Image (tube, rainbow, N blue to C red):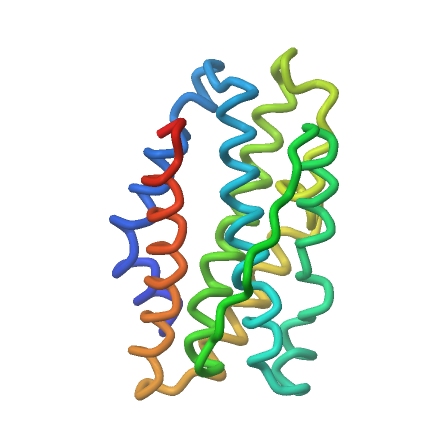
Length: 188
């Protein structure tokens, strides 16, 4: 199953992103508002760069199977940036070459959503974060688990073994994008 392969093959990249975002501090109660701002800005850059291109790579049947319109996150993360009083800059959208590559990028997007729910739940316990709405991190609410499982079913059903390389390349491209942004960040 391609979802298992992606998880295994991108584990180091996933852990590198978490380390650069100081994820361990979230559960230690040491995560700062500046850390959170960096996280939201990175995810905004990622979403604005990939979302439109990824969503346009799928045909109508795949989009319906994924419940794709429910998965749009750009308006939600913009609300969070506005709440933090962070100005958004215009970025160009990526060009996704195939549905297989788009599935790989979407794997990273949806995985971030799965993790975002945990992050939002943890940060909401801390006084410094009580007034934040977490529109992006908690975008699916109680639907997070079912939407993740739905995504895994679709990717594992629709992607044939000869497409696994392109799916993996999409996921790697997504992680490379985030890591390159974090390496360029003044905070990290």
